[in-house]
Amino acid sequence: MPELPEAEVVARQIRNHLLGAQLNECLVGRADIVREGLSTLPWYQGALLDDVERYGKSVALGFRKAGELRYVVAELGMTGLLLFHATQTRHPQHVHVRMVFTGGRESELRYWNPRRFGRMSLFDRAGLDAYRARRFGVDPLTVPREEFIGLLQARRGRLKPLLMHQQVIAGIGNIYANEILFRARLHPNREVTKLRESTIAVLYDTMQLVLQEAIVCGGSSVKDFFAPDGTVGQYKSRHLVYGKEGQLCPNRCGRVIRRLQSERSSFFCPVCQTNRLSG
Image (cartoon, rainbow, N blue to C red; front, side):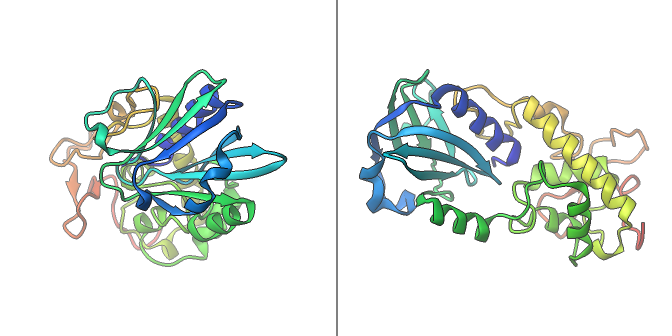
């Protein structure tokens, strides 16, 4: 499932290959793949790709035409990918949107999404702002440390679900939540209200480090993810706990990685990540 690092890799590749290109045609194979704004699709013909941004796990393409800006937002969802023309897919019937460009380093951008958990949406600026406000919390790459500390101090509940709560912290999913918590030596079920300020600061620094390292590695290609140009993410080789149930803890504490009984895929070390009441 693409998370923040994968979405960031996608946004950067599209920015590098298509910024300034003209959209000549946008073909939608399934009307239900567009969540909002399908009736505005004709406006985009002839518009220039003016901006590419990432919000959480989504990628927003900003188009300019006659002084007006409009946006196409692609949710990557569980299996969604944005791919250039030459990138091959195993099931091409699941390419639901084709955007044909001139003037860029690539001629086409395709939205491939076999399970259709993600959607595309077409917005004007006000619509994009409203979408961002209701869908995304703070960005873990850009939120200042003090703001992050205050945000956690104001919340209740268990730590891992909070890290993955997209309306609180946008972009972290199961893979990176596991990796961040292991490196920060925090149990997934730690109560947020019991964390000291210094502990939250360590969590913040660890979160930044893991996400930045993953982006440099091209993300994690665990199942279906690959970048628009077809390259696979290499950060999977640096995973320390995700999917490592039964393997020895990489910290060499002598214990094995366990999976929480109550959750399908929370991986942790019972020694390195104790669930203390405070700290």
